[in-house]
Image 1 (cartoon, rainbow, N blue to C red):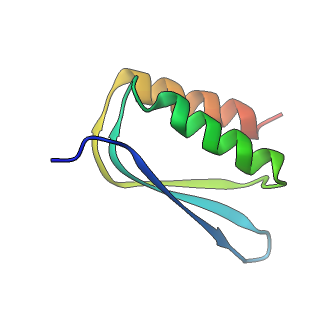
Image 2: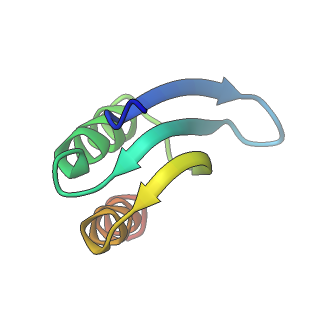
Length: 77
């Protein structure tokens, strides 16, 4: 089992453009900064809407939940 977090990014065009992250692996303390860096990069590149697909996340720890809360704070004013 591969526990490393892999993030696949996809730009979805609708009435507004949405950045979509497909996560695979473990979202934990080891991968927290990886998710935050990807979210910051997308936000700095102009993305204002983010959808995170957790369907293939094998393990979500409290540190992973904290990371998602920090991503939420990046994308909300």
